[in-house]
Image (cartoon, rainbow, N blue to C red; front, side, top):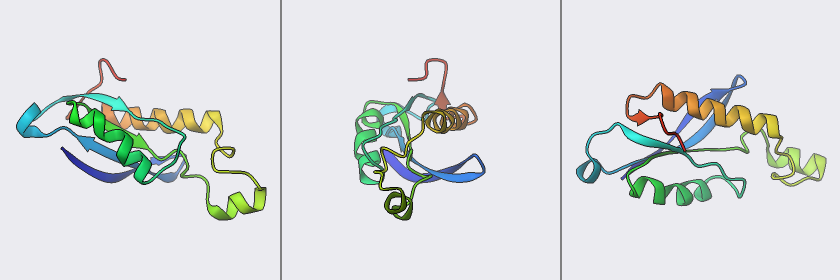
Length: 114
C-alpha cells in the first residue's frame, strides 16, 4: 500500500486529498476500483487512518479534506465549529472534484465508484 497527500482545485482553491493505493505486489498494477472516503469527523490523520482499510482491501481510495475552506480564525470569528461551518453544496462540489480526479486517473476504475 502506498499513500500520499495531493491537492486538486475546487472553486479556484486548493483542496488536500489523501490518496491510498493498493499494494502492487498483492493487487497488481491496476486499474483499481475507486472509493471516495468522505467524512466530517476531521482532517489530517483522521483522513489517512480511515482510508487505510479501503486501500488495504485492493481499492484506490481518495479522501478529500472537506474542511479546506475553514481556518481556526474563521471558527473563532463565527463562534462555530469546523463541522458547523460545512455547507452542503460545497461538500458536493468537493466530492464532484474528487470523482473527476478519479475519472482522469488511468489507475482508477470508476464504472462502479463507491
